[in-house]
Image (cartoon, rainbow, N blue to C red):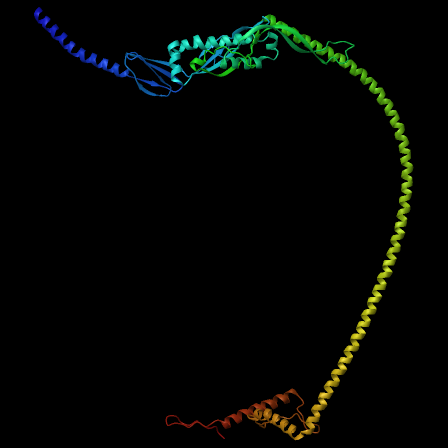
Length: 480
């Protein structure tokens, strides 16, 4: 029984071993295939290290690339990095750090929030050099970019006094900070520098113009750049240049001074406000005195002007009366002249009308004369023509009569061709004096009725008598 169990166990182990080898080979093949390639994305730089050959390759564009599984390494670097010192943490940045603590040239301190934006080089050689020294992205940011940004900020702050920085020097400070980050830190030395300031003159009663500015000088210790023979600023080696890293943007936030410097600035602000108030009060007093003086001057001037105005008004009134009289006289003269001119114009118009009528009558007379003469001449000519015509007709009387008879015959004979004269068959007479007349309407109607009967009888006598046929008997005659 035990031998049978041992035999079964051996067979089971043999079957499991036979399945384990293909499964292990499949898993190894899958792992090999999965690790045989890697993907690159936009916005990142990849350094591929082949541990077999020791070769380093740089990829900056997105794609899929082959790698040696298990014998290679891919390191990822962001192409653009943002370091935020004390700025809003809600913004997506590479590092969020506290604001940079700086010390100014007059030993005052403060904190300055800022943001720095860097961009990696696209040169593969510089990328490989950077990778050899820092080995990964985290070391690059912490060891180089953060330290360099903080160092340049601290060095730049030593070139300004605290009062100078917080009283309008922030813009110039930002320009110098960005310049040193991009091109290298200035080579500086600590010197006692004479600073020229412009302040308001002291307030006093004897001061003519208390708002007038005056120039004052003050000696302070500052870190100033050293210039070369050409007058250019000497610079230290920029650690970013050897790796080709560029500074693309620098922004500075709202700086905060230390309490002592803040109190000093507040005291100066209060003193300036009190000074301004004192100047305003002094100016107000002067303005009030000048106002009173001006009021009196205005009253005196107003009185003089009123008297002068009254005098001028009187003169103007007299001049106005004279001018009115002149205008009235001139208007009357103009009216008389106008009437005279109208009379002359009217008489001239009547004369012209008379002249025109005379000319018209003269022209009519001459026209009538010429017309009568023309009629006379025309009558004479017609009489002479008629006389000549009659003389000619008298000389040829026989011919003229023959032509007249010919013309009469030509008109008469064609019209007498169908002419007939028919006498009436019946006659009704109304009677003459001494004979019997038709005195009434009845007599007239009886006469016309008799005419009708006579016409009918005539018609019957003229119509032919129909011949009777054999089939038709002759009509019966009336009894006599």
